[in-house]
Image 1 (tube, rainbow, N blue to C red):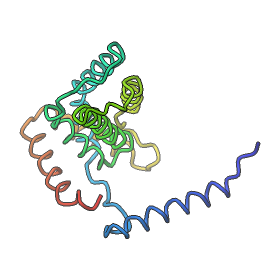
Image 2 (image 1 turned 180 degrees about the horizontal axis):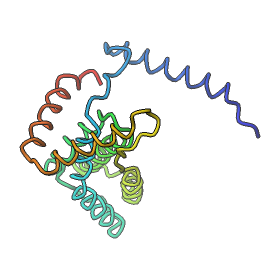
Image 3 (image 1 turned 135 degrees about the vertical axis):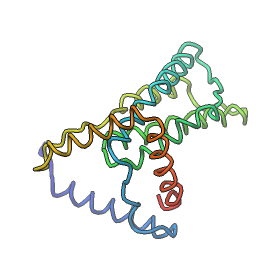
Length: 191
């Protein structure tokens, strides 16, 4: 069977038009806001998700081992939700996917909690565990190397320098994170 690239392009155009129309119907601008979180900050934020990854792995294992849905206090994981929200607006592809996966994982955990509260556990614990594991497989961080640009060596050096500043200067990291958090809060209703 041959791949029909013209058909793929046509389907992609149709899908983009449906998304555009849906956004307009909901009173949103045609396009989502531009990504704005710089790659060096994104890489540091992804590194800060290591404890979250361990929590998710442990939780998924508990679900698999017990064969039952288990409640989890996602309020205690809100700091990771905030990191995920920022990363979802990263200029880096892998970081933004990681952010989306953090948000997705926490939504899934919230869905489990909701099913347990309603005493309607129609969600299969194995399905939840598998979903969580698969979501973690998409976690990644962006490289500082972008060979698609003529000035990639200078850009890589600048990214590394900023990354090192953010890693070694906690006040700078907090200030930058707060700055981008304010920007996120001002546009989240447009996403």
